[in-house]
Structure formats: structure tokens, C-alpha cells
Figure 1: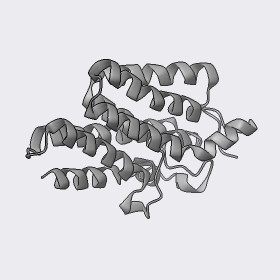
Figure 2: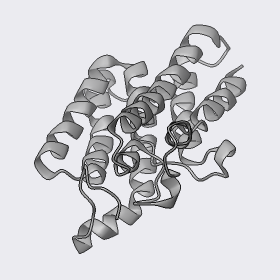
Figure 3: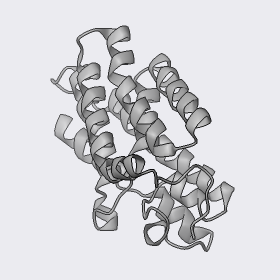
Figure 4: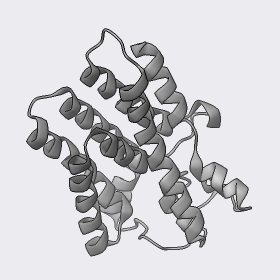
Length: 200
């Protein structure tokens, strides 16, 4: 049952709301403009705020859903905390490398936040607050995302100490930083786009 939960979580993560929402609203495929990242920030560059909000909500909801379903329905011999930790990682990996979209996925920020909401609301509040503070002061989504991601295992440690959730948060943080490696180069070069900028 633990394996089934992980597979289902990956498949849930593989649903790209950036692609689906853009297609439904008659917008350009987010994988073809701007950062070419199928996520809410790049969808916002289309100029359609509603599309970006729907993408953000959808990607976040699937992270929460994977954790919720595992906690509610997938009983197994594997301790729940370990099982949920594996599912948390799997749904983020699904978003990053979606089987339904030729493994061309997003960077996992909203989905990771949804996972944190599913794990612990205080954890999610700490991570979201970190993102908001950096985003407001610097207006650079990628910088805010990476700092918020790195803060997640720290907040998790404060809540749980050495725990499976802390390890999962650390793995997710590493995955998010890895997916932002192109943004790191742009940040160092001073060419990284800012929140709200439209695609040329």
C-alpha cells in the first residue's frame, strides 16, 4: 500500500495546472514563453492574473491532496510518518517531471507549499511568510522560492526535531534548488525576471 500511495502521489503531481489552465483559457502554452516554466509565475507573464491564481491554487491543492489521501486512506505496515514523507517527495517529483507532459514540469514551489499545508499548518505558515517577505522586498520569485524552500527543514526541525518530515522537507528543498539552477545563474548575472513582468 505504501508503494501504491507513492505512485498515486506521483501521478497526482504529474497533472500540470499551468498547462491545463492556459489551454482552457486560450492562452499560450507556458512552456513556450518567458522562463518556459509551467508554473504560476510564468503564467502571470501572460498578463492573465486569473490564470496565474488558478494555476497556483491547483498546483498547491495537489500537494495537499496527496498528503491528505495518504493520511486518510492508505493504511499499511509502514509507519505513517515515513509513508507520508515519501508521498510528499513523490508528488513534488511528479510536478517537476510529469509523466503526462513528457516530463517537462515546473519547479515545484506551489506543490511543495501544498505539501507543507498537508503536513502542518504552522510549518506552511513559516515557509509562506518567508516567501512573502523575500518576494515583497526583492520582487524575485525564484529567490523567494529558494530561500523559502531552504527554510522548510529549519521550521520542520523546530516543530519535530530529527524526524521523517524534516528529512522530507530537506529533500524537497534540495530538489527545488536544483530545479532553480538556471535562475541562480541569472541571479548572479543580474538578469533574473521580476514578479509581474510580462513576457517579451
